[in-house]
Image (cartoon, rainbow, N blue to C red; front, side, top):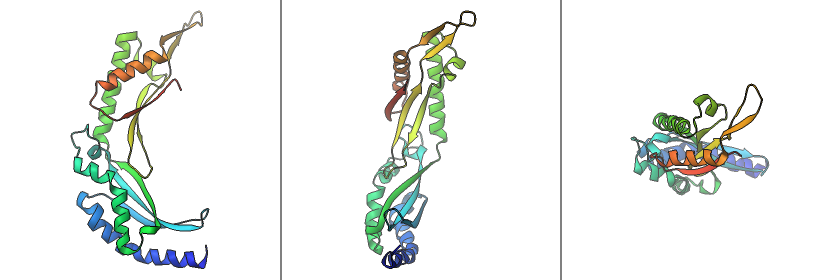
Length: 205
């Protein structure tokens, strides 16, 4: 690290307490959003910068839960712009690396996805006479993906392999649920739920 970079980093470190106070007052405080701010030196780019870790309340953010807060959701979606603008008040706007996210408080969301999974088991059994352990052994499930990029983003992923069984006597393998049938069933069950997240298909991939 050059002397100039060291001096800049030292200056930023000295400004951090004020930056935290300003961010708490103008950006995070009104919605009780936990965050942590620190300076970091990136040796590969030979530059220093400021990173901010933010806790996102999943149940409060997702619009299919009873705890959903539309104002909180909108505030989270505009968080990076507001943080960058606020850091300008303490002379740190040009040294902002970006936001990183931890996702917390997802009890209701997890329960909704669990219930969805149970509906899928029942539908597969009803349509194809396939049993729960046969579904589970082929890793068929819905997965809630949470991005750690500079924007909060959640999506549902369809995961699983075609469901096959082997005859104990002959060793012959037969397919109970094909890839296409599995995807279509997962899609039908999902669309009947109140979850409205984007979907990424990883069935048989």
